[in-house]
Amino acid sequence: MNTAFTRHAGVALPLICGPMYPCSNPELVAAVSAAGGLGVVQPVSLTFVHGYDFREGLKYIQSLTDQPIAMNALIEKSSARYHAQMQAWLDIALEEGLRFFITSLGNPRWVVDAVAPHGGVVYHDATERKWANKALDNGVQGLIAVNHRAGGHAGHLSAQQLMDELGDFGVPLICAGGIGDEHQFSEALALGFAGCQLGTRFIASNECNAAEPYKQAIVDAQEQDIVLSERITGVPVALINTPYVVGMGLKAGRFARWLLNGNKTKHWMRMFYTLRAAFALRKSSLDASGKHDFWQAGKSVGAIHSIEPVTKIIQRFQAAMITMQQGGK
Image (cartoon, rainbow, N blue to C red; front, side, top):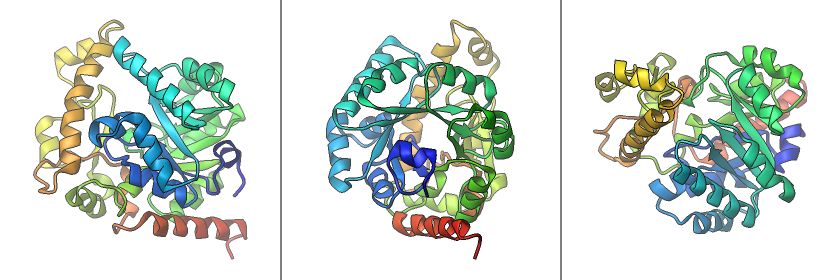
């Protein structure tokens, strides 16, 4: 399927395996790209969770597939040290031949300026028009339209509402959130999206090295089991509602809320939450015992019924796309 996104990314299928902390292990990223989609490297996941030197991790992924891979840059300037590290990772990615980048949680201008001389393309996460407009003003070529059914940092609008809000910008829009099977994939493309970004569906795959209890929790969960918590990064994050999550609570405390509302203090509070959650999510995602039931997922869980190889998942999506192109025959 030839869309503006497939041309930008150099892939056959308008499908992205979204960057996931902590679940974007190298084998999963490579498998999605090898099957015709776009696997996205999440740098903190690659280095902190899976233990790779960033350059060596990229080389390892590229040894598993010769198809394009992308990189995610979380660009909120929570600290000068973190920003410098992200700049270093971006430089390495460019040196290793990556040319497609997804940015989120900040101003993407510095990423756009860094990749432009190399022919790079930047898409930015957006949950509503004002953030999309700012990203486009700063040079991005496409938007990841994050809706209210997404895992990770979920939005508050439906896919249709986002298409209505962002469609007139005239840039490729990627539907992110609520895509668990090939039927939902086809429906999103029929709305006019240039592609879809999936995360939860690929956690429940053979190539993802998340622990089996996490994968099985996704298979067993229904849409109503997904809740939004402010206690991960300070902004809503989608989780499976488990005893651990119930005990932790979903809302920020009074003092934390005061810090999150301050222009000078919100970055520090978000960093505190993020660092605390980073260790907990890493532990829970790899814990084979299932005792640490702290798991991110989106509402696409309702359409996920088994743990499967990436190739099998993507083949079904590809078949649905072909049927769609042939007019449903």
